[in-house]
Length: 52
Length: 398
Image 1 (cartoon, chains in turn orange, purple):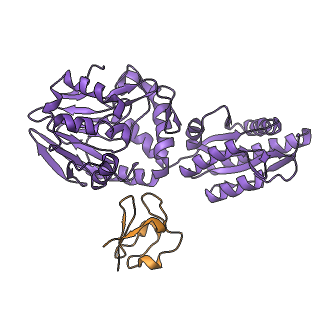
Image 2 (cartoon, rainbow over the protein chains, first blue to last red):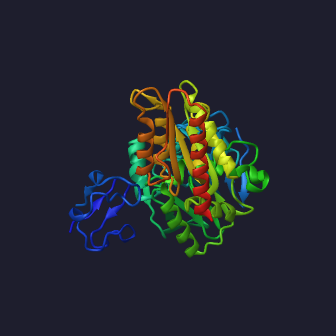
Image 3 (cartoon, chains in turn purple, yellow):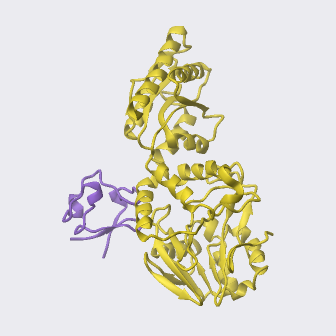
């Protein structure tokens, strides 16, 4: 599954999810709820870029 | 020129005081600020952070009172914001651009974006350490405290933490240490936290937990602004813990603006209602108080009442300014209510209430609207609104 990087440097790794914010490990980027934002800086998903 | 201050054996504070600055990117500074930079001398000489670009000459003069600036062997950039990185091009030019510039991964990216030059970046991550000459420097990334590049530099042998903007205060004076200034520094530290770091409170909590785990036995904290914490570094750490947990105080803040003094009358009645419940209160007119001073009061207010007249079917522009600012800093754990006078449609109270809900503040009352000028009965409704806010806060805190 693809990782996505926020402009602030945070990387969303589906293998890890974002447990602190209710995202289980194994959750693909595409399956994140719309309300999920960068846990570090608060940026919305549209600002993330796929990590090559 | 500024006489460098020795803060430990062969370690100096060489930054600059900006006595005159008042508008710091929209944050009002009553007593100026300092751009702290630190020179660690020994077998090798290391400069930690720099100053705003227009103070570069003064920084070089300060350094030259200790050593020839061109003999600096490396620079550490804890934070790339221009008030700390602005003099980096001058410094690198002076010392030689091939010399190492230590920073975080995001720091290297940001410095390239700021100065459009490729320095000899040595990227450091959390837990990395380097020995330069007779000294060891270790690093802790503190992303989003308060920029992506932010990091701390730790001298494990000397037990000195260089904390970039964290634990800083905008204050320029003749005092350089916590023990010299005493309690007088705390309002500046509080204002700094409220206006710069509140947004990142969960990160502050995580950082404090990480630092506690590292068991660093910190002897001194050197932030990039204001005084150095050497007598009791735990004082500011404890304050950061309290502020970042957003513990509500028994205090209600009333923020308002007015066109023809009707909302002013309402605000004063709301204030009286709060006082009748023996709860602390602060009344702030948004055209008399700067948004950054209002924000400082928001930090620990347990409840907030906002009053706005309706102008052109919206809230008053100055109130919108202050609310946008408050909302961006994400204060939590508040009780709130709105009030305002209007002439015909009266949308302001509804709009303010929606703003509170978006900030996840607990709205205790649908708000009080008064057409044109409040009469005695209207003012009693405002008084009751204040009393309700105060009572609800007391219940919450009991």
